[in-house]
Length: 306
Length: 294
Image (tube, rainbow over all chains, first blue to last red; front, side, top):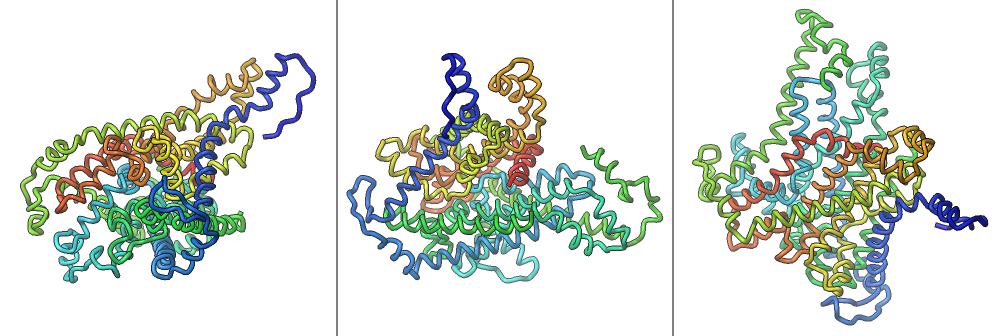
């Protein structure tokens, strides 16, 4: 924000010069200040709390404990590390299926057809609809006794499944719901990418005798790669932070066996429900570092491409 | 839009370019396969939502009875129950009030910022704003809760609006940045030569021309605020509760009242679906604006 000292001129000119050299900050500073105030102070506060034994109430006194909270978290193999693992499984699992299905749908809708507008609206609905309503809806559908999912399985002679009711099938079922909810987002982004591509490289490959799969693999996908990476990045950020779905389906602690406890749910439960502010702040800082690391790795990949 | 692209796409797909009887079998079976797949996509994404809608018109005994999955006598009882309960209309009002204020204030702060970041190439500031998109909400909620609780603000509308602005400003900034990027700078330069100041040019020329972009940012902001659950779960009181939290609270009743929950979910989702129907193009362009900028 440093500005060169203004040359000696009259007051009025000085003012207009000041406004001119600062004009960009006149526009931008409210937003930047707002974000900085609401991020930097809180993150600083979290960092500070992570070295204390703050707990119980927001007004309770607390003292410094050094790195104890970090050591506690990193040596906690019953909650912390399983939560890290679940976060990774949920994010990577959901992302793989969402990308594959999203790409398939984008390719399917690429060429115009009758009722294309309506299909696009239908595809928009899952991820603009309120996530809490979506989570409630799937809780009913996956209810082992009265749910529609087991009824459909029954039509094909498949035995009823426990879905969310069993700790071992909870995470896969949650991934399924996330895939249902966010595949459309990937599809919409990739569809926009596909329609912005020129037809010429594809046409040239066709004239050279390349088949549909070859053209997809050697022409379309490489051209679409920047869009695919951006879609991965946007989705990865949100999947790592998934809260609504997990909390509405399994509640605090990720259920009685912590079967849905990702880092986000773990940190939320420890901090805002059990008020272990010091310890949970350490978990949050570790979570934050993890997200920054993932983003950094993804942007490295992007720079390689461009 | 569609007709223009049909003409542009040409190449055999167009009915007139290739006589129907000479279309090879492979191509015809591909069209049939494609139609089937598109139908499958529609069923997969629409059926669960229709199930929610249907369940909201069922009595709880019919929801429990799998033989009444499709044949049942519809009832409005769930809807009258939801609206009769706990001042549900107040929750609708809270959601609307918070979403409208958060959207308006985010646009007020975000649009000029996006203009400056786009025109003066303020990449570092843009990155700071993007940071708000990456940081997990929980890591802010703890200190916010700490600070706001000590100030005695938790449970008020202002805290909710502030917390939502935190999510919405990055959305507005990124959508508007890519919108301003796509507008030729000649427009303002002409008006600067005509004697307008930078601020004047922004207010009189750019704002008016960027109305579609502002609509996009506004619609997406409203949706994100309306849908938000985590911040509302922590920062609202019984007077400021929003719809997602109100619906979630239904679960804690002794037995799960599925009919009422589905009705409440439908009530909460319908406004968003209506917005999506009318503003489909804006939503898509808003999403892809974030994507192409990255």
